[in-house]
Length: 175
Image 1 (spheres, rainbow, N blue to C red):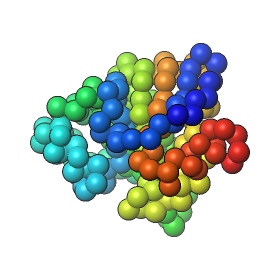
Image 2: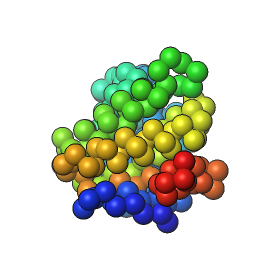
Image 3: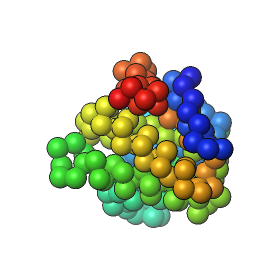
Image 4: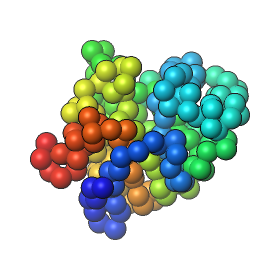
């Protein structure tokens, strides 16, 4: 685990399955049509139940850079903040990733969520490079926490060492 303090707030980096964490909320990257998809989406549906997708269906969409929230069904988390992050090689990838990260943090604040877990957004199917994702997301979170945020703890969750190492490098000041 890697820890960085931002005043009285904290950013942690852990390795594991974000859908198995006991947290106030975690972030999940969905499609514009608010579909869970495969990977963690399948885990959310399998372990959390179909209620999450039903809530998303009722909402209908999530434009790029925005965030919406649902319950977490039977998962250990209290809520899921769904974001629609950028796709690599589209114009403004970094700005869209920054906007997406801020949208999730603002929605957490609006819902009284003080602990939020993030995956590296956009690095799977959408191929945002991990180094870019790590730098943009961690810098954005650190800046947000330093500006009187009601979010007290942000946990970055890496699935494996491939994800962990770039995130750790930025948190430790090496990237």
